Length: 601
Image 1: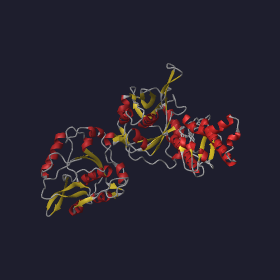
Image 2: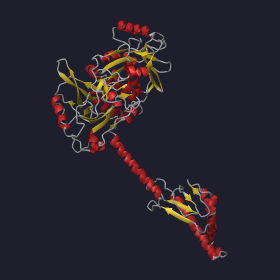
Image 3: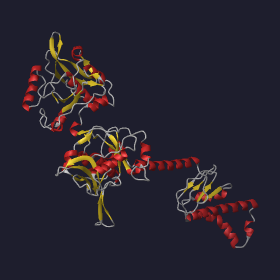
């Protein structure tokens, strides 16, 4: 402060000396203009000092030769003093934090046309319209973002799955009127809208390439990514595990599930609860309300908790202290299990506490804890065993190529077959070494054949990977190209040629396959050309992975014999490259071609 006042002191000293001796004659050597100029400068300095004092030496001084443009004021409390701006035409100087250079203040008396403007909290400065527009825009965007966050807090889609658990692929489209649905009055809780009482959740088919099942969900919630809240299954009933643990949806789909069990559903028999849900089904145009399955209920409840830390369908105390009345909420689901008394009982999900989520079955109908929730499904897909994750059935044919009609049933023990030990590669399981593929009789109303397959793979639908026949021997095309199966059937074919089948004659390979069939008691045999090509190419169209590649020149011989130059040679399929797959025939019994094997189911 002394540094600031010292140069100003030099200005005031002559006037103080003159008045102290009581003689104004001290100014007799000044003319009138000089006196006015002197007094003017004194007034300027006084105002500067006042401003510095009011602001606690924290003012901003601005000197400019242009018209004054107010600086954006810093945020202050209501009792802070005004901001002073000093504008000097000789140049621009900004002084802050009380550091006023001495030479600046010393030069003030020579300034004759300075402009000083004091800005108080009540006298707002002129405002840059661009800045105002930006601030208003920022405020509006912030409010809109908050609204979007509020509205999307009940939505758990592909982005949220990726953030907390893993990649689930492209999410299916929601109905065009989903905003209208979410903003519509809730049919269960009056005075509220759907987005306040429901959870909109994507049920994925896979997470990071793994079938999405109850077992996988249990692993995911124990170690969510990022800032997700951890939890677990506290009670996972053995019967529930046996009935529901390994099923996954064949495709991803959206559900809209209620936050809570429906009013009036607690303590009612399961049949009464089902009727309560059915009464609401007729009130919507499409995707009617229905009872959730176990995976749907658990996924909605747990995904909401992982993101928000808020438990739904919970177990909690009602009262001020622990020991007061305990209440629990669970929703019954569609799955029915037979209890020890041979009665059908629905699985219930809920009782969500600090120790985790509970899965129960076999409890009395009149238990107050058990109500029923309901949901709407936007697109519904079949559930199947996780072992079928990489199978190519009617649904996949429809997605990539066209309708193939009803697929024949797989054996009831297909899960056991696929999870069993591989008969060819020790230490491996069948689902990792085989392809399970439906060979259709027709596709989109056309007889299925090698010729048609060659057309289909060029332009698959649904985001499939396209390819073509890199080589399609004329003899194969003429003799085998139009052959079509009489009916649809399933094949289980090896993903590679059998070990020990390379560099053998065709006759030796037939013996090798027969040996494995006899050893295992399983009906393995040579693949047909259409079967081999279909299995290899359907896998590529869906996954982009090439099998039987050209890297080491891998072909498989097939069971059909093709006539060429007066002799008969086996058809071959393979040498799959970026240019496509080769469908041809052997010649002179080449020994560098291997042999795959398959069984019909």
